[in-house]
Amino acid sequence: MLLKQIMQNIAAMKQALLFCLAVSFALLTPLSDISAQTRYIKKVDKYLGQNDTAKALTTLNKYIDKKPEAAQLYLKRAMIKIDQKHYDPALVDLNSFCSVNKTCGEAEYWKGVIMYKQGNYTGAVENFGNYSRKFDKAESWFYLALSHMWLQNYNLSMYAFTRSLEVDANQPAAWYNAGVSAYRYGDHTKADSLLRRAQELSPEDLDVKMAIGLNLAKQKDFIESNKVLRSIQDVYSNKGSVLFNIGLNYFHMDEREHACEYWSLAAEEGHGQGLTSRKKFCDKKPKKGRKK
Image (cartoon, rainbow, N blue to C red; front, side, top):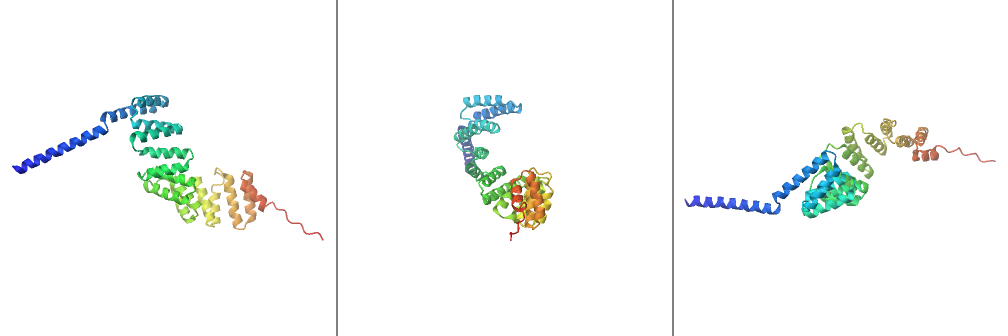
């Protein structure tokens, strides 16, 4: 009988504890506020679905004036402004979100996006770095890697691309840019492996083929490099660059006649290095013999 009474008391204590926790949570985050924010955002999404961005922003502005403590509304408005490329006002909203929400969370990532879009790669590294230490998101690691590339921190960019690919391996752009980072870092064996993987995922990507061709040349495989470069010489956006590098490969193989031929073609396409190389190595007049 005593044991039964004790068990009943313990059960009652558990119920009381759960009730206290529920009340505490309700005091911290009122359900009415969460419901209101959700209702407001759904209405804004409705206008956005109708491509009426102006009305969506007008509605958000009204809601924020009414509920300035509603953090999600600032984040929503920041997303719209980022889409409109109004980066500074978006940053103000993201800072407001962090202040009201007491923690930045997803806003840290979007701050990084704004920094990257504005060309502030040092700031982007800071924001994406902070976010990636807490959240393992492929896009954040990818942007962090690109930011390091712009700062010429190629070893750090390779690391960040690797982390991005660990989260999502189906990213041709990440494989390609990791390969470019390895190329610029001087690790041409690794660059070849990364670029070949990018080509497997995106076999028609001409930038990938161009990078493979250039990397083969760095490995002194000039014949294979020219095979790859010739496969894109008529369709690559910067045809002059392709022609110049084919000529450069011939020059390294000591086939100056072919080198001059391709440098001349590159010069005709407006490629500066092609013109310079042709003048330096191909347009020299034979020296006249000394007069007796």
